[in-house]
Length: 290
Image 1 (cartoon, rainbow, N blue to C red):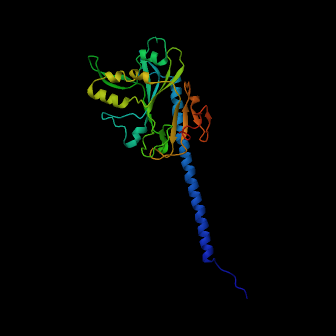
Image 2: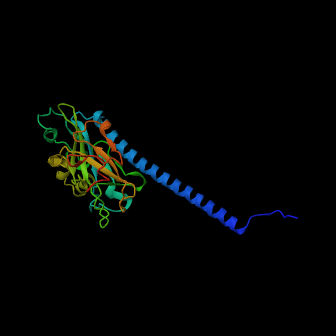
Image 3: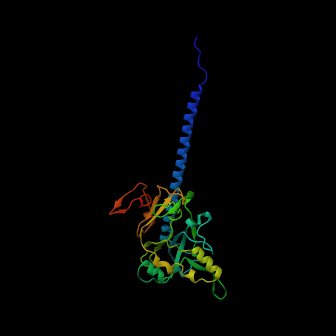
């Protein structure tokens, strides 16, 4: 008489558990990778949308305050890497070193002279700060950002970096710092994109010091005195999904081409584009930089 088998052997149970565990681990890893990729894409797209919105606002400027007739809006200033407060803190909580600020650029509404956009704006005494309060004698007692200033930080812990290779001995060494002017030429109305590499217009700390000391000279010339630092050149932002403390081989290149006129020209370079023309890397400079 043959006896029918009942249940499973120990080896079969172990094989079942091993296969199930491998499948479970594969699902978890795959899900985590998918979430990480989606977060990276989210960081990139939100930064791109921010840049596009700035171009849109420069193309369609709104009035500030009570619609002051003596002040005109000429564009936007984007700062990355500002210092903060009276002590000029640049690093600290809430990732201050990577906070992106957007300010209105305002100036006199007089007839503009001729010349380059920086020359004309300098003549109009453009600034990113305006008088917000005066005493009975007409003396300035408080200054603040012109219009509606706003700030932004990349989502999901991603960092904004330069095209240089990551220096693992100096994690913060490749963080992007600089100022970008997106302004309309007062005469022609064409939009100009200008960049001051590693030159940060410290609006926050300058205004904090001016209001504390009652000395507003530096704040009144905060932008117009620095216009000669801005030039027309290509700007490549590298978004690192691993954050400022870790190097990454999949940094995404967000490019503002030289003389960019509108937001539709904000380019997201393909991760695998490794194209060289006349010994210059025109592909993803964030992945294949030297």
